[in-house]
Image (cartoon, rainbow, N blue to C red; front, top):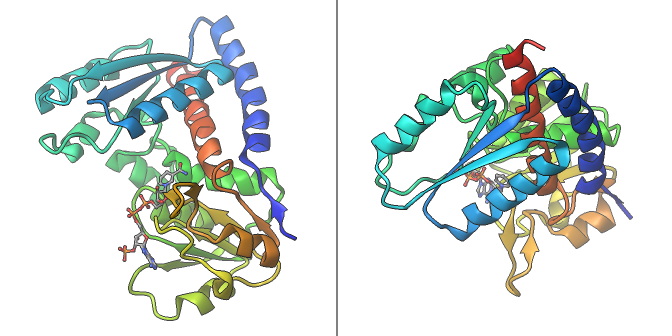
Amino acid sequence: MAEILKGKAVVDSLNLQLKRRAEELRAAGVAPTLAIIRVGDSGDDIAYERSAAKCCEAAGVDVRPRHFPASAGEDEIIEYVRSLNSDDSVHGVLILRPLPAHIDDRAVCRALAPEKDIDGITEYSMAGLYSGKKIGFAPCTAEASIDMLKHYGIEIEGKHAVVVGRSFVVGKPVAMMLLQRNATVTICHTKTAGLPAICRSADILVVAVGQAKLVTEEYLSPGQVIIDIGINFDENGNMCGDVDYQAALGRSGAVTPVPGGIGRVTTAVLAKHVVEACSRLAGL
Ligand code: NDP
């Protein structure tokens, strides 16, 4: 039976370090603070805001939420983002997306200062990720995958990592981060031929496709480490990943559960980025 890579252990260990660092920063006169912008009342946004706030609280990070009605104009949101850029008491800004259709998402992302871009949504953060320079931050979910591997002592260097999915939010950044850690990386997508065989050849298999239980037993081989990023709901309305969890438990070496895996670590990484942004901005 595969080892279950639970998110809670990673979060507990991260929070311990973060709390200590946040206390040091507070003692030096700065309180790490995250501003959250929510436009409208989408249930997903409200749930994510709640879990981000809870995680920040556990890590010693203050949260400053601001809610706009769904009808808010693009200029109003951009003006608020710019006011946060120049507010020294705010160190990170989380913009809950997707934004309502009448707002140009890219224009809002572009308005955000890269040093406060704790979820890697600006082109500067992307450039930082691809160049290996400390500009902005990596998207939290991508980094959560790396932190999960690190926490459980799973070697990345020299391993064949297969990433299924090539979005800018998850697939591409996680592939880049694995490459930076000297994995040999294969990126797959909907036009990939022979996906099951490529997945079977992986030492580390990262799946971020958004399709419930796409990865079945025929995609898996013994000893593999499987990072399941997907968040879906099965035919009975239960949350599940992109990987058939029972098949992975029976066949692989280690697997992240859904729920209780990467999603949980993602919000802890968000808090970690706020603490890091605060340290960088305060020069401490
Ligand atoms: P996107 O829809 O933006 O991207 C999906 C990617 O998967 C695309 O690159 C697509 O390929 C590829 N894909 C889709 N179907 C297949 C298939 N049958 N075979 C091979 N490749 C396929 O999704 P995201 O990257 O934003 O999210 C992926 C999943 O991760 C979702 O379930 C999402 O909910 C979850 N997620 C979880 C987070 C967390 O905190 N745990 C955070 C963010 C996302 P192509 O490019 O060819 O279309």
